Image (cartoon, rainbow, N blue to C red; front, side):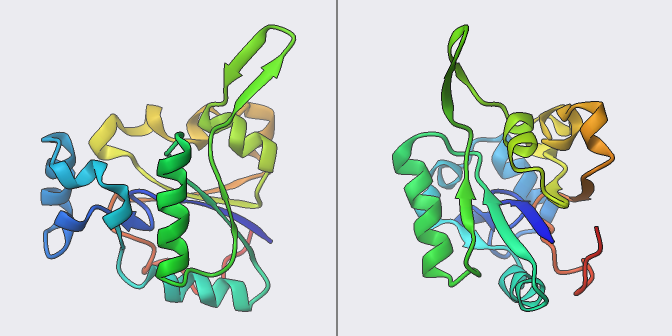
Length: 167
């Protein structure tokens, strides 16, 4: 089973979010708290690492998806995954690609369609515009039936998801 899971807002949050309610954290993002842009100081949400380890031990392939696009920011997220000892898994991001029409930037839907996970776990993107910002929302209709979408509230984490996921 291949699980694609979003990092920021689903697994990781900015350091000033610690000890605040989910509602307060959403407001921090909307108010542009300075720590929101300091990706190298992000922290895991809840016990997400334990949850991911449980899935990995049951045979799941974990793939992480970051919202970051610059090499430095992607490296910062990769360093966090390593530092906090998240289970092994590739870190994916939106790439610049060339095609018949020249260069173009991948969108989240393109990454999801390229990977075609059995399960996509992402947050509801409340602080940045909601459903229209989510990955699954924009996936081609004919592919949606092949991907189980799990949406959690932004910054609430994945602790409440079952220890055993079924696609």
